[in-house]
Image (cartoon, rainbow over all chains, first blue to last red; front, side, top):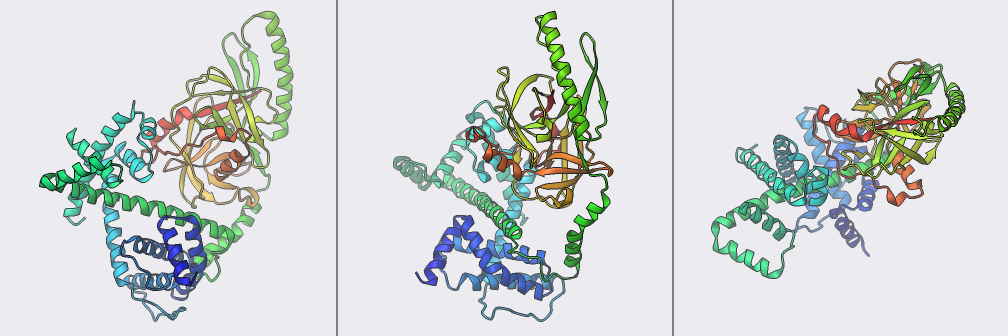
Length: 188
Length: 367
């Protein structure tokens, strides 16, 4: 198997949230990116944060139906981390000359823009969730995030049966939807 | 109600759970009815957003676990740190030494010894003695065993009633499984002849220790009493990852006959003498708090109170919850114990959390 096929497989595993794939990517790429951030005015904690964000950008990109691998994972992660870090330095007015430790980079502006948009939408959803109150928040999180079944939820939230819990779930969902769209239309 | 049916249909359609006929009908409905089509489009978009969020959350969870693992392995190292981080690093490195230097007399287990001094018609009169060390504890326990033996003999002669349970030591424990499995400290059940657990309503049940590990100081009890009925779902979950310094925590325990709430924060990621299986927490704990749950603001159990430093106030050690997983793996009938997976405490205010927790935290009484 050539590198291209290996990486393709690795990314397929990543998309299915596979721990082993995540660990492999971490081991192979984190040191380079940490070295870059430490060299450019950052701390160890910054390296962890930036690397996690770059991993999310990679995940979001690899999930797209239209996704094709155009460069190595290593190059992609480095380019994204570099861009994210320089953006952060700029925001904090600490921008200096950049010391690179990987020669090859690719343009990742589109990916970062898409990532920021998704972040903003996720933030809206979280904000809406925080406004609906309990038990709604708990029920919806249990169903949509923790992927619990209705009977499990009925038991945990003291409903006499799954149907009652389901009715409650839809009430909550409609409330969340209303809040979400009102924020969405007002641009947050 | 019709709206709910439609929402239900949309969800099943997205998950591809419809049979072909239903699917065809649904697609036809969308085509012929623009209003419905609008609802479907909107709801699908909304569900998509929710799904994306849930995916990212699950993924982030894995990222954190991998990161923690690699930090523990030293793959993600602390070298090459700059100013601010360096100070934190040095502090971390020497804090252990500082903590050891600050302690002179060592630690004591936090269990209450109850000496039954007299026995009136209805009530035990209990005198609480502050605990000096474990030896005194053991001595008392043996003494009381003899006393109980004598009492039992006389009770048999005197009346047909069950002898009332007289505890020589009491501590805290809490459920790990709704069918009556309780976790507490190993030092609580050491030298135990009989074990009784008591809930917040004062109901008592006999229990037996099915697992005792002196090195981790964890014990698992099983309620053997036939009067015990399975309780409803546990509201908390057990944290596997490590907790951050400064995180707020709270506990419920039985330093008295009544449940007592205490709150504090995580002050170090290692326990007494650099013990990495424990945390140091700053909380007010008294004899009797041993075996109590240490819970973070999201309602996750992060540890179990085990001991405190004798000569420093508020320096308490808690066994990390990760050890519970290890303990459960070693229990003989491990397949019958299921840790709770659904957390219903998250997002509740503290008063509500405590209310929900109360019925799952027990007094463990030993004689």
